[in-house]
Length: 496
Ligand SMILES: NC(=O)c1ccc[n+]([C@@H]2O[C@H](COP(=O)([O-])OP(=O)(O)OC[C@H]3O[C@@H](n4cnc5c(N)ncnc54)[C@H](O)[C@@H]3O)[C@@H](O)[C@H]2O)c1
View: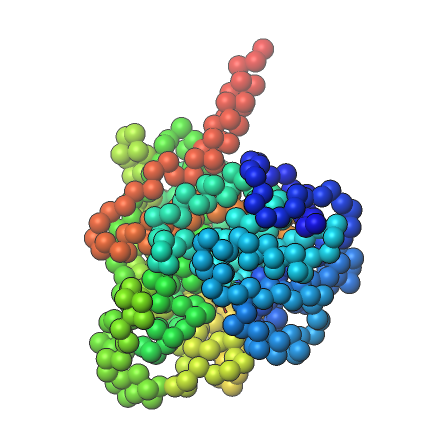
């Protein structure tokens, strides 16, 4: 019998394969689905501590049958060995008719009778959805890597289905059944300083956010042939930057924009976005000269798409406005840019074995939010490579705040603070630790409904350049909570 960590599913349906959940006090086993270098390097120490501290019994691994040799080698070198490993046949893993049974068999193979299981889903994003559906169906507590899911239709990326799947999963998981692993929920600069500082001032001054400009540079350099061959951070499944690194920052941008829904609960907000993108087909015209030749990538070399489909984008720039959909008054204007074609440290023609930073990624983020003529907060955060080891990259951040200090005496005209040694993985580990302890509250799947709706809109907008797409009823849950709070406060005011 598969026992699951007892979160209460919101909707029960007939369980096709797995036995019903058992209520048990036994320590849970963590099933890690997708055992790549990032799990070994970033999370295995956290998983090991949870086992040593008695919060977990053990961990197990599920991966693809085709990857068995690689996984065995990775496991042999791992500091802590799993209790069990199961491999899913590749054909079954990606066949909608077979995948739930294949997942069920793998879960049973790594489970003990009566011992609850939790699942950390860390596969490439197109494989997330069937595992999420399995967990929702079998009341298994789940943690899924960003960007929650990439729906497929006949094997092709179908971004228009994102919102529907998110709704259905959120209904079944409820508020606490599933968390999402992403950068900006426990981040000491983005969350503890940037978002919090803006929110406090908006409420104190009763003034909305008037503009937001965010630019995330990935510094990823793939050769044209790698767009066709890569299966991790792939482009050949029809998605690219928006479903890779961009999601961390779409999530951050939406946390800031949604502050307006708290401040203006009576307004029915909507977001219009227009986007332009560029992709692998244009790379040989944009990245030219001796340096492209040095990594073997000069001239047109992009292979025809292996399945006759299209490659995902490398860079996207979007313009948006947030407005009151009843009055059409605009509240916030802004831009979002997610670019991979930015400075990288790649010097090598072939992807090296055993290196996580295979394509020389160096990221840089620039985000500025303004509260009208009163205040702005700006974060500039960038990687500082050491030059020797591509996997050893430090990071630097500067937070600059500017304010109308003459009007608001407790503010300064300009204040700036530097942070070095910013390890983004600290915030990821904090999320993982809390989830393993059953106290993760900041990154529920339901709280990712808005950034995923905006991701869907950006994917669709980028696919039809210059067309404006609307996200209607922006942050409705925030609005509902605030309206309730305001009505309670009003009721207290009029009470005798
Ligand atoms: N939170 C972060 O900072 C961060 C950083 C990097 C990647 N990610 C996310 O982690 C996930 C993995 O990324 P990746 O591109 O490195 O993945 P990947 O392609 O390297 O796949 C990871 C592992 O999953 C296995 N796998 C793939 N399909 C499977 C299936 N159907 N069943 C079982 N195992 C399967 C692969 O064999 C591999 O071992 C993605 O969602 C990505 O967005 C998050």
